[in-house]
Length: 529
Image (cartoon, rainbow, N blue to C red; front, side, top):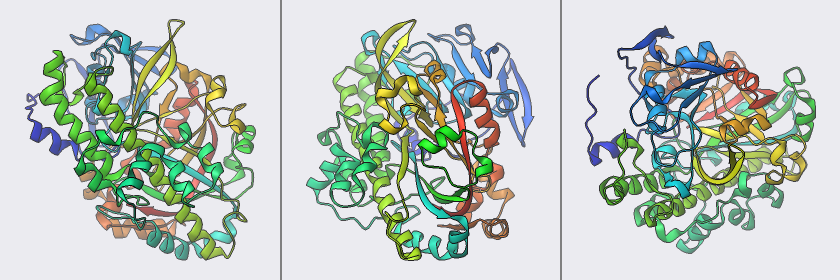
């Protein structure tokens, strides 16, 4: 394999491609690996990998010099074979980071990313020199999923789907560089960074109960706007209420009773009517989070790691001791990015309610447009977890992975979900549908973490060679899914065939005891950024 050259400039250019969780990459092979052809690409499963549980595969520390803990990949046979070599290279590199605990993990949607693999999970103990790494969080800080329910039936919505999607497209700007309609002063933007979703709710862009149904109540503590650069501020202040580009989307979906597999959890989440219409949103902190990641990556590479004599296997894993001045500064800035993302999805929620009200002639309250949940991926959080029976306060990195607490952590969940567990929103492709899951106590084996989506199985470039956006749009409409995208090329990149089988990913997680299926949600309208 060609040796990877590293410069700060090249590093940051590449970082810009790491939008939320999907970007182009080449498939690599090397000696000592099993080459398995799947869906037109090559993967390389290490010879030393061993099955150590249901859908759990372990790579021992002997695989690579410098590994401090084993690496574990969650996958069934099919999904394991589809993983590119980058997954195994990266998850074992993560296993070498200072202060890592138990294992480095990759979820079944895993594929090559920036630093960590997409679907990567790792926890670090600050008391043992544990670090924080932008490459373990992602450049779209707190890219996440939000699900709203309604009392509308598909028979009411389907005849008006084009009108609805066009209005939603007007109210929720999508695409590269789009600006929102919410004008903020610098002082107000500071409050967004510190308070998250609650600030925009106070401004009338939401309901008080919304905040109760957001992970961490829509606010990561410790945010400090003074740790955010002027350039990041400039990029973020006008982007509240925008969807962004790439794999971000706003989707109108249907929950059919035949696809509800856990009636108790579904009832707790308010998914209790056949043909019930719901709305799913996937987006993050936009250019604001990207700039924060870029700023601190440069600092960690050029100053921080040399200062603390940190040696790592991949410069994309640039990091700082969590308890250091630099580590705390990045964590405070990252929290600002995360809180902006919570606020962004909250503004989008308000615009969605406005659009539904205009189209259906009812208030959002009359349509019972309540928030089911909002869950983050691309984030680091300080959480308590047990290691060998001893409770520790750890810095949990989730890169393209999602929190999935079971009922055993009831105190950390909304009151109405404590008996069943945390809602988990797992996005599929715009052609195949998505899932509402519920966290299980078995997720403690992965620091309360699960997959966040289906996961790409091919590059965007290859998808554009195989599909044409306008043809895909027509096909989807004939299948009962009206899709409106910012560009035809963008639609082609998001074709269903570019993704892994979401049903297989979900089944894999359930068999492993991490999450349980609640309902499959089929799309009828989609806005793609």
